[in-house]
Amino acid sequence: PLPCPANAAEWFIHSRDSMMKVNLGVHFNAMLAAWTRLETACGFENQKVTLPSKGRPEQVGRWITAARGRRNQPDPVVHDTEKYGIQWWRWWDSLQPEWRTKEPDRKTWVVGGEYGADWDSLAYWGVNGLLSVVASLYFWGCAVAGEEEETVEEWECAINNVAWMME
Picture (tube, rainbow, N blue to C red):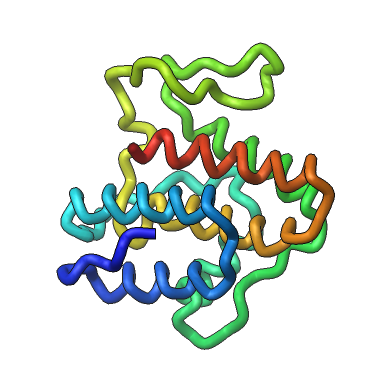
């Protein structure tokens, strides 16, 4: 991933360092780099609004309640990666702008082509924003390490989707 910017906020440094404890590979690192560029462009500002939580995986809520890992508690563990993946995709689906289209399989979002004009449904940065999405993928990635190829590919698809949106 990109080096941590010199002007990064404490919350960003802690979160980013925490999500680099486990090497989750090039796809995850590319997404971390995209997130780093996005937060840098937003000046590491904390918005007063929060990313919608309806349908969010429960592990993310527990992590937020535990001060986003700053209370020296272990990261949430995903025990059922299939269930988590279903829940994650439902949450991600609910956050998408209306103009965004899905692949013919109706499961994943199209990555590539032109961006739509309105990304307001995902314009949440800072500690209450896309950090939750990045952390959710970190928890999922730690759980799928060493699992069947299909399970890992679904997680990588999610990572690529988020990275594309952040670019």
